[in-house]
Amino acid sequence: MEQPRAAARRRPPAAAAAPAPPRILPLLFLLTLALSSCGAAAASGAPVGEDYVRPPARNSGAQRKALLGLFPWSKKKTSSSASDPQQVHVSLSGEKHMRITWVTDDNSVPSVVDYGTKASTYTSSSHGESTSYSYLMYTSGKIHHVVIGPLKDNTIYYYRCGGQGSEFQLKTPPSQFPLSLAVVGDLGQTSWTTSTLNHIKECEYDMLLLPGDLSYADFMQHLWDSFGTLVQPLASTRPWMVTQGNHEKESIPFFKSGFQSYNARWKMPYEESGSTSNLYYSFEVAGVHAIMLGSYTDYDESSDQYAWLKADLANIDRKRTPWLIVLFHVPWYNSNFAHQGEGDSMMSAMEPLLYAANVDIMIAGHVHAYERSGRVYKGGLDPCGAVHITIGDGGNREGLAQRYHNPKPFWSVFREASFGHGELKIVNSTHAHWTWHRNDDEEPVKTDDVWINSLYGSQCIQDSSPEFRKILMSP
Ligand SMILES: *[C@@H]1O[C@H](CO)[C@@H](O)[C@H](O)[C@H]1NC(C)=O
Ligand SMILES: [Fe+2]
Image (cartoon, rainbow, N blue to C red):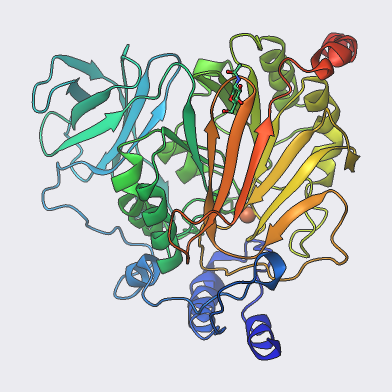
């Protein structure tokens, strides 16, 4: 037991990635890649949680391939014809609508999507918008965003992008429970990412939620393209709802304000939900109201985000959406050494409001490990608080966050530094089944497995309503 654990500790630390100046980044990046291929720990079956010892990483990540043989700022050619759709992904866009996003090398391709419920039979057509951006020496392809609908619930649609090329298909989410959500954070594009995505592909899910850190492009824009290509098989078939992490920022002081690539490529339904920023928004699906917050934009009580959140919460009808789920990047309840305390200021600004609104589950990423809390509020257990889940373990190149504070805090129920994904199967208005799946086990293996009850119908909602009204009324 001693030997493999010592070996595991020699792996590169999952350091806080404060963006270094761009010129040394490619170098650092190569160094990280070189280091991360020597981490080795012997496989062992039974132990779970902190005692689990991971087998070594497999070779050849998409990111490494993308890097080799490519000038870091150049665009990667991924399609056979310049007008072919690339990097197709879909997201919810208000009630009964979906946004189709794709990229073409050819600027003359129209932003149009033809679609219908029978293969190769397109009964409807929608026009949308397009954008592109330049970043250092890189210029993106034409990025198309087209909203289609109204669509029927729980139905397969066949669609074609730009009036030509291959056919894609997507399934719209159901309008009633059961609803199945796949959850993954800090994805990146390594061989671990590929295993995680393969696992997600095997499970039946209606929608994917990603609490930040998508491509790990880190200033090298062609890696946004390779990420789009990597996720297309999944992201073109089910809505992917994402929020930003630190790796989406890519700001350069006095030169580039942040989130340029992220906002251009991963447009989310912020306008549809009354927000003025792509960095925070909400949506409703079946009986769930989901709020995607921004850890990397202002969140204090005088901020636009806070004002928007208050207005969004005030409009929730728990009879219509008994479940209330909130996602953001930096965790508030985290017993790992990595990023310890980073979520504290956002937590002190927003936790009272979210508690008064009776949030059921809060999901974060950032820490490259998995952790689940009991119901908590203000650092203590509270039956009316939210369950906090940290799931920044999609498989990125920075490796795992292996060191935990000991003893385990009383509020922490389960913690393990492994790559994997989560599944939230919401059965009805009161019961949901949450499972966490390590990506080096077979997909059906559930390493963490728990039933979560919603606060809907509990005394908590009545008890907190005066406090909630008070916060809502405050200036
Ligand atoms: C909700 O699902 C749970 C678990 O299957 C079940 O025990 C419970 O009776 C269901 N509640 C309702 C109101 O259907
Ligand atoms: Fe992060």
